[in-house]
Structure formats: C-alpha cells, structure tokens
Length: 136
View 1: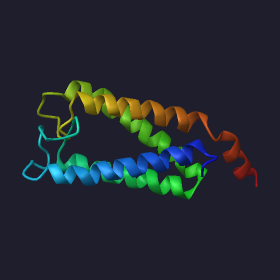
View 2 (view 1 turned 180 degrees about the vertical axis):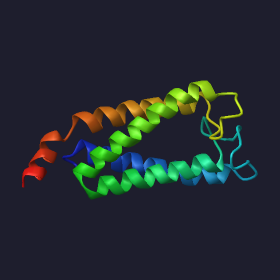
View 3 (view 1 turned 60 degrees about the horizontal axis):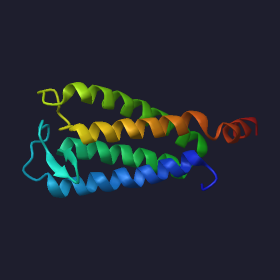
View 4 (view 1 turned 30 degrees about the vertical axis):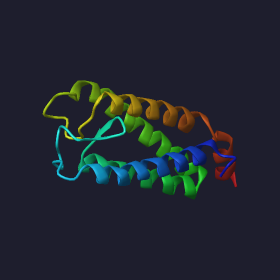
C-alpha cells in the first residue's frame, strides 16, 4: 500500500472521515437530523445527517484503500468529484433553508481542499500500476 499514493490517501482519508463521523455524534445530541444549524466540531458545523455522510464516505475510502489500486483510484476520483460539487454548492447554501447538512465556511474550505487532493491523486497517480494489472 505504501507504494500507491491512491491507496495511501484513500486509507488515511477514510480513517479521518470515519473518526470525524463518530466524533460528530458526541456533539450533535439535540440537533435536528436535517438541521440547517449544527453543533461545532472543532471549527466545522455538523448535524446527524452530516455525521452519517462522513461515516459512509470514510468507510468507502477506507475499504477502497485496503482493497486495491484500481478501487482506490476510482473511489478517490468519485469522492473528489462529489466533494467538488458539495464545496461549490455549499457556497450558495450557507444561511439558507436548503442547507440540510449544516455546512459552514470551514466545511466548504475542507470539502474543496479534499476535492482537489483526491482528484489530483485519483486522476494522476498509479496509472502504470493499474495498466500492468489490466495486462496481466
């Protein structure tokens, strides 16, 4: 795994997002599931729905990172694209009733930074290893 940037990134991000999802439940008691305002976890706003999404993304990344180069590339690219969309949409959702994930400015920065890193690694790394696996 250490020789594959995609597997390493997926595994590390997977663990981090799983931890964030779990820790989020410690601060969101009494917060509406779809609340537009959540509780603060470090500098991020979270609600129970946001926590569940973090758990799902963390699990997908971790499983892909532990599985193979091909799956980690695919999941990194997919999650990166989704986070790019969420980061851009989040800019327009702040302070609106459609903000069912309780996003704040720090969330948007994190989502956009995660998107860039996941997309760059997912689209540019491990191509040779994947091509060798396909030919074998």
